[in-house]
Image (tube, rainbow, N blue to C red; front, side, top):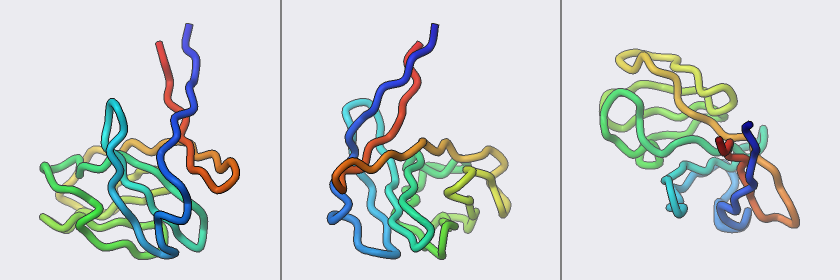
Length: 107
C-alpha cells in the first residue's frame, strides 16, 4: 500500500518572484521555483550530470542546466533539450499559509 506525506519545504517569501533556490530536506535536495505560473518543486540535480539546477537559468517554467545546457519543464519534468534524456522528478506542491509543501509517496 502506498501513502503520501506532506513535507514542508520552505516559506514562499524565501523564494523571490521569478527566481529559484535549492533547499535541503531531511532525505533529499530540491529546487524550488517561484514563477508567474505558480510554485514548482523538482529534484535539484540534472539527470545528465551532477550539476545543481539552481545554479542554472530559469525562464518561465523552464530550467536550464548550467553544465551542458539541458532544459527541463518544471511542470512535467520533461527533458526539452539534449544531452539529458531522463526526465526530472517533479513533486506535487501544496501552499498552506504561504508555506510550501510537497507530496512524497511512501511505500
